[in-house]
Image (cartoon, rainbow, N blue to C red):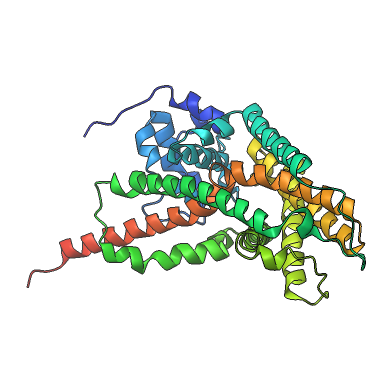
Length: 382
């Protein structure tokens, strides 16, 4: 089978990040020092070689970039300053665009102006919708309680959430199907028995919930905790908003020990801790994984921080019976959250939550299938 080479592929990849891959002369130092590298998945060296050769079609089926957590050791010790760690980040952005059949991912990743335009358009659309349809003059009731469900009925908001969820789920699931086709179906080198899909699926679930593979990166426990705390907080917030909004968005002020309050505090703490940790790191650039920031990195953490900040304002104003301030904060909260969800969940950085565990899942499937094929080949005849 012939292999198509794209001589301009390196130029295309420049739009997804940065990396001095031309400096790489394949000494193997990055693979040797990486705590996550293993037989059969010798990243980042294999991906760098494919880039240099313009093997675009082969790269589309690679899972190697999803196995990397960017501890930065490979870039720190590279004798040529080829920055292989950042190259893995660049490849993750590129692969996200490869899986996305709409082309929106590539547009958002390659153009800061395009990403900002979509964010501001959605922000303005939400603000305009509230100004037209919502009543900001609704006062607090006789007990001084802000009746937020008169301003934004949870039934209506939940219905709109479900429409948005269904739309984004369609795009994300079809992109995942595209990933499956490119990684598994088009790989003729290995045949995966159907039963293996069920045997190894728990690994994808486990790594999605724990991000435990990242703990293999030496001295990065704070980074792991911040990443996990941020991820778990957003997942909990997502579940509450989509499935339990009538319980979470209530006019009743629950006592401080109520589960609704504690879940809200956990979500807020995780978003604030995680976003501030990553913003400080990317501003100071004193660690290898923070030295190079793509525009999507900054947009992502700023929007998440604003979601948490406006959520805190809503809570404070509600507790103090300040109706107008609550409604304005609620409007700003949704005006920030909708652009973040639309541009990141299916088409950008947040989709990595799905692609990373699936990448590991597909890698383990291939390894298990190859081991089975090898054992069958070397088994003595009876």
